[in-house]
Image (tube, rainbow, N blue to C red; front, side, top):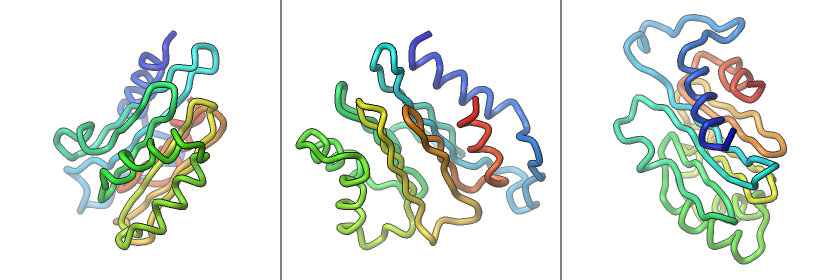
Length: 164
């Protein structure tokens, strides 16, 4: 199974299942959905991929960046294209995902409104959630994957995505 099929299956599973221990959304979110994404690397083929879901129309146009053989970057919440454009260049020049993320955060006056996940061709990850993101936000990252989300019912959503 290729990385696109895997990420699609994970996003579908997150949309159609209720994580263990999840509580219903507060009434103010009764008709809204949160945002969550997963970025991953297939250790066999080296393919990189991303799946994303959000209440935001055309979310994929604003949240994902990638360069074959280099990295995938997911920028959500108050997404900023700088993370995708600059992040790829920094990693092309030899920075790790964590180094590139730290560099970009220092340059972003509004970083506390953002959520960013990065995976490189080696399967290394880095993630950030700002303190001013509405409601719950978090991530679970490991070698070859990083699941992140915001405006969700809680940590169980991204934990279940990462487990799957």
